[in-house]
Amino acid sequence: MSHLEQLQHWITEQHVDAAYISDPTDINYFTGFYSEPEERVLALFVFPDAAPFLFTPALSVEAVKKAGWTGDVYGYLDQEDPFALIAAHIKERSRTNHAWAIEKDVLPFGRYEAIQREFPDAVFPADASRFIEQLKLIKSPAEIALMEAAGREADECFRVGFDALRTGITEQGVVAEINYAMMKQGVMHMSFDTIVQAGVNAADPHGEPTAAQVAPNELVLFDLGTNHQGYMSDASRTVAYGEPTAKQKEIFDVCLEAQLTAMDAVKPGLTAAELDKIARDIITKAGYGEYFIHRLGHGIGTSTHEFPSIMAGNEMVLQPGMCFSIEPGIYIPGVAGVRIEDCVHVTETGGVPFTHTDKQLQVIPVRG
Image 1 (cartoon, helix red, strand yellow):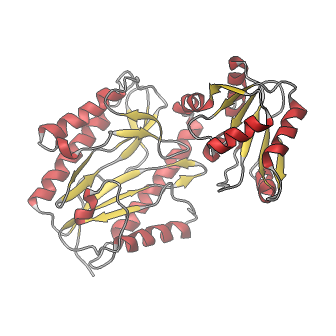
Image 2: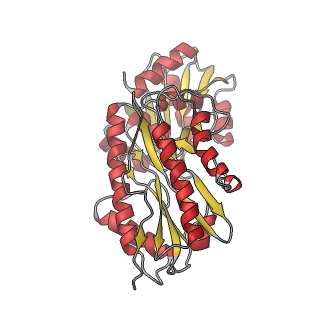
Image 3: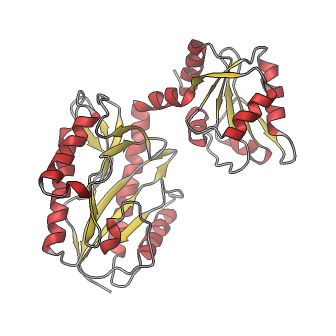
């Protein structure tokens, strides 16, 4: 059963008249078409007993057909009222339009109001967000194969990034070399903005690359991934540019032990909370617990961050086919930051990583 057929089956079970899917990533998941419409309206409408349709800006109609969508697609011009047109198409398909399923996590309130304007009696009893996160939770072999390909691309990004390190190059310059090299290889979309942070900058776990120059004898953190046919990779490595100090090496070794131990612990039956605790206890025991300030991991698939969270309090049991990151980090302001990350898929016997770049502390020779 296709993803779209599963959605149709679900809305039948929910006794709703229509499902309005608005998130571009979810639309791609069900249709094979991805576009970021910005302020324009892109929507998928699905019915229990009628054919679904895609509604797009007129300028995207041909792209939808090229993407392989064989159902109806309707376009609209900028000067037209999209929701008046949507209402007309829905009424052609369904005589009852009272109960709706919507993605409650992402539907803008203005568009929620627009639906109510066209269908004053509409109610919204079903949350498609919760259904979709469960549907995406277990990846098929075909999906895992695409994520393995994205992982290989991420490994190539690391190779290019490590080779780009030299005295005086900026963090932004390293990012530019990675992105350019991947584009020349046909990888046109990263899964998120590539992150390179050198020295004390890496102590900001949500920092961005800056014009700061790479200098000898500091750690450099890389966090990156690619988008391979709609499926993402996400991985982090921390390397030393020149010989690390004893403190830098200590922080790195603790983080690496936590990451490797958690990777080895992955298996069906373990809970997300238990996996988080395995890594966190190692960092806490070493005296750095206060500097590990985020969850151990997040789900990955058609988005870099999706359900579930690998964190304290989450008693979800790991199952074969789940895909998520394992990324302990230690961030000491004014000193250094280290994060080591792989995303894995759970098998019957353990966890298999999508990325394979060496995680031992690599010392990049000073050059430039």
